[in-house]
Length: 443
View 1 (cartoon, rainbow, N blue to C red):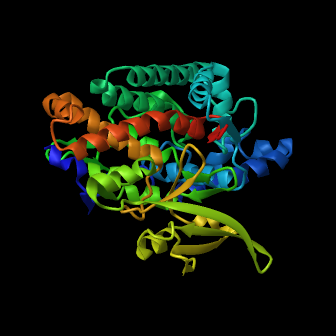
View 2: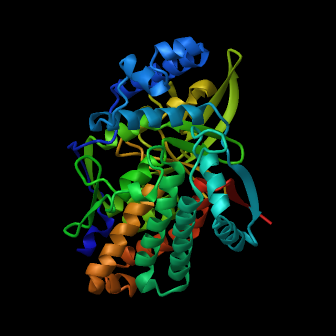
């Protein structure tokens, strides 16, 4: 079994079952017609209103507007809400504020910020900040009671994280996985455009663990649950550091996710974590899928252009992967790096897997799941799920890994991953659901 800790398995199978999204325009047509009728009703005289039923609902029925809760329209409505949220985000600046934190006090400062979010009124504020299409009216957003429930999810997530951080290495994966699961509920309510209440969430984890081969299965015909809802909590993929900020439209990625079942080995996921990049190379003898990325601003025909430089001059991803990530934009080579110039107005069109480390450095991740792009937090969800399952159901094997009684490379990469996740999780939480985008600066 333990030989599969470094398995690079990737299997993608066409398998669709009741996708929550349908891009057929049916609900959008109803919503547009409704808005048109509302505007007409506003300018009707009293006499005209009487002639048209006397109230708005009767007027809708008179005009043939179908407002019934037709289950066939649910997926169409979900897609309409998804695109509405995406368009609102693309039309606005990133709502979070850059927050440089001195490296001497970084860990304590991050945990204080995480705890500071655990306030009911603050959660209600965050809901309006994170969900851009919710509106600014007094009645927009979530109720105090729902915000209180989300706050409790955050509190539980923090307590479980601290238990994992200070507790025995033997039980870290389970504490970390359930910490991430608790926080995932907050991610979903604050960011997922089709979820507004914890009561509406499916009851499963949303991924399947296969002990034979230590594989994770997500997407396609897998049961929908926390994982799929967490993925949908990223309708846009935010790529940001202190000098650069864009948002990618993730709608196509989400549509494709529900059409294909992904079976993934642990080694594949480990190869996509920049914080253990060198340890992955040492333990496997392979380069891995993480590559330094720098972005600079330029001008072309008076238009602002972002120039993406992928690679470190010696190692770089495959050309085909870069072309998939930047489809439709020219790719060239310079000094051993791939160079891609993207007009700032078209930056939302790229579909690259990019992460930002604690110090604000950007990393390009080779993506074996194109056109699906998994946010960084989803990679960690799958990894901590797998390790927690190994810990629970094969404690003998898990003990062998921790005590270095098996392959020393397996022990090294596992422990280094858990350390990296421990350091990164609070940062990812703040960057995903708070008002801040923290990063470390040298003292």
